[in-house]
Structure formats: structure tokens, C-alpha cells
Length: 72
Length: 529
Image (tube, rainbow over all chains, first blue to last red):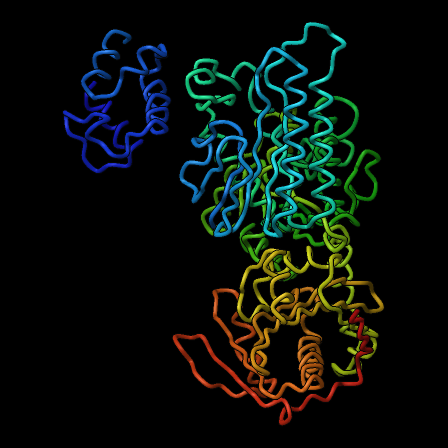
């Protein structure tokens, strides 16, 4: 699961390497527009649909993983 | 290529990967002058009050008026379609009417101004169901009235629209016959036995022939490559009562038992077009594979598995290969011109020497300056001409206009002979700097080659420059994989090779020393202004 999320992060933010502690505050490319792109890609990759409240919170790899774990 | 997008909603994901900047929402105050092209992409809002929505759209129209007046660069304008409809009264069409007016305005703009190009959003929408077009979650969290999940398909589709606008369509379709233009095998089933006509599946093949006839009317060259006996096919073309495409609709054919890759190469040579301008349609997967392997630049679409799928197959062909943004007169008469050419080649055999052959053609050349009527064709020629093209520089209408604004000369050449009018088929762009001229571009359509027309075109335009008092002329040849035939062109004209830098040859010459006398074989008209 974590690795798949990392692949999506890499693709959306165009990164070569993603650390486990990546979050909106540590990643310069994680702006609001790319956050939207990230949600679209995650929904696609895991075939899920997030609620807006979750989307607003999903601003680090850990939280994304936790939210996804509840859905899949 | 840098784009600047005027927009009223969040649409960034749809242009991801392109070099693009966005205006503020509903903001037309900032105009990015560094952009090469502009895009206007406004979406209708999804409010409940129709009056408000209609007024907004009307206002978008006024904003577009203003923006289109600000630039001569290419402006790609998206039409509008309603995605969300609230309508409390069935007969209330305020919003639809506003959208109609808005779209009409775009159409008028694109007819009046060469730089304005209409992008038909309904062509994209038709691939999806209404409910897929909007995802309300994203509408409310991110101001996106268009579902971001469609971004990937949108980018692909938009790329194709841009290519269409840039006139990158294919020129020729090579068709198989048995089980492609009719059902069954002519050699085995006979004329009476093949399926073509009113009943299923004959009606499907008939539809496909009608589609191809329409392609021909739109300037695509129809040719045939089939393993058959030529006499059988000629009599089927002549005698079958339901045959839509007959002998006269095909410009060239190879009906024999040789391998299709060789046949297609021969057709390309005969028509003087590149293999990458050809689409090959054959029901037989082995033949398709052979052509794919041996001629990788030929486009080879998959053939439909059932005759009743010819309709979507035809749509596919149009959308992927043959759609034009706007057809010029030259495009629609091209098929006739290619046929005329075959006639010319035949009549060549009757003459002992080349000069009397040329004389017999009664060639008429006329030279004209760029104007609003020929600029579309001129830009198109720079995009499409590969073989007789000294520098192969691709230009848009805006680019060409700029040469004139900056004091250069843009000459077009029309060629007519007793077999027909070839239309605008030559172009020369000259820049002038401190009394010295430089040939930026020189190109001729391959249809008119082989008659020394290029020679007289250049000598004549150079003599016009000389009359203006210009003494020195510079020129260059930039080699490409396709323009080897013009390698020595400037040497033949009499220019001096100054430098050869990795194949690119720089020339110059003194106009008072060049031989600019014109052959009497051609009738020459100067239609400047």
C-alpha cells in the first residue's frame, strides 16, 4: 500500500525519491493545485472516492495511508 | 510553444504537461505578450438562476470581443456547451439561447480573423455520458465544472485539435478491395456474387464507399492496392450497379499479386507524396502487419471486426487522420490536380524533346503578394511542403504576416496549364535588411515540379528585388531527410557558396551579375496588388 501511494506521489509531484515523512509542509511541489491532482490520481489508482472532509486532511503520506486503509 | 489561457474556472489539470500560463478567473486585464498562442476556455457556471447564467455568458462574449482585438497571434477559442441544466420551465431557453449566441460569435470571429481558431468542445463531450462530465465533489471543493478525471483524455483530444489546426492531416488513403470495399472475394464470387447494395451486409460496404467518396470530395486522394486480376476489377467498377466508387474516383491503383509494401511505395512515388502521408486500410491482418513492418511511417489502423462497425470506423479515420480545420480551394480540387498530373505525364511521351513538351503545356505563371485570401494557403504550404523546400521552416499565419510587417516580401506563385489550374503552389519569403535581401523560405508543391518552374519563379522574384535597387542576395539550404533534391538548387541559379556548416549551405550573390533572363516558354503574369 505505502509503495503504491509513493508511486502516485512521485508521478504527481515529479519526484525521483519520496521519503516516508513527506507532507505538504516538507514538499515544495505540494501546492493546492497539485493536491487536487494527487487526489484525482489516488482515487483512480485505488478505485475509491474520498469525502471532501478527508481530502482536506490528507496532507501527509501517513494520513493518506490511514484514510486509504479505512476505504480499501 | 507557450500558451496563455483565459479561463473562468479551475482547468489547470486539463493542460498539464504543456508550457502554459493561466489568467485569473474571469480576468482579461493581463495579457502575456511572451505567449506564442492564446486559448480562450470559458465554461458556463452551474447556478440555479438562469437569468444570471445567461447574463454571465453574454458578458463572456463581450470579454472575448475585447481579447480577440488585442492580438494577431493564434487564439484558440473553445465553444461552450451546457453541462448542468436546472430549467424550471421546459420552454425556458434563456441559457441555451445565450450559449447559441456565444458560439455563433466565435464562429463569426473564426471566419473573419485568420488568427482565431474555433475549438469545438462538443466533439470532446460526445465521447462521454453527461453524468461523467461533471463530478460535483470537485466542482464544490475546487471550482471545477469539468471532471478532472477526464484530464488525460482531454489532453489527447486537444493535442489532435491543435494538429488539425496546424494542418497536419494525411493526404492519401490506400484501399484494399475484397472484404474492404465490398463483401466477398471478386475473383471467386464474381461480380454478381460480391456483397454490395441494399441488404445486409452489402449496405455496410455501400456506406463505407459513400464515406470514401466524401473523403475524396474533401481532397483526400483515393487509391487502391489489391491482390486481384485488374480486368475483373475494372469490369466490377464499370458494371456493378451498386458500385459507388468507380474507376474515375481513384487517382492511382496497383491491382496485382506483388507485395503490398512495394505497391504502396510505387503509389507514393507516382503521386510524389511521402509515405507518412498515407493511410492503409485492409481487412487482412497479415497484409496490415507486413505494411507496418516494412513501411513504419505509413498509418495502418485496425480494421473493424464486423461490417456494421464501418460507421464508427469512419469516424475514427476522420478524427485521427483526415480532419481539416478549414479546407482551402486547393484542397478540394487537389484530387483533380493529381489526376491532371497523370495526364501530363502521359502526354509527355508524345514529344521528342522536353522543350516542346513544356511549350505544349501552355504554362501560365502568376505571382502575387500575400493578402488575406492567400495567407491560409501560404501557412499551410510551409507546414506541408517537404521535398522542394530549401529551409523547411514551418510558419503560422501570424508568422507570415510578421515578415510583411517587418518590411519583407512574401510572394505566392499560381500555376495553370492546359490541363487545369494548380492554384497557389509556390512560396518565397524574403527578408530585407539594410538594403540586402535574404531568402528565408523558398518552396514549391511537388505537383508542379519537373517543368523548371522553380527556376523562373526565383529569377523573376530576384529581378523584382533588383528593380527595387537591391544588390546583394543571401540564401541558404538546410538539409532534411526529404529535401535532398534541392541540394544544388542555388548553385544552379548561380549563387556563390560562402560556407558549408554541417550540411547547411550559405550562399550569396550580386543581383547585377546574375543571369535573370526569363525563358519565353512560360506566360508570366504579375498580380502584385
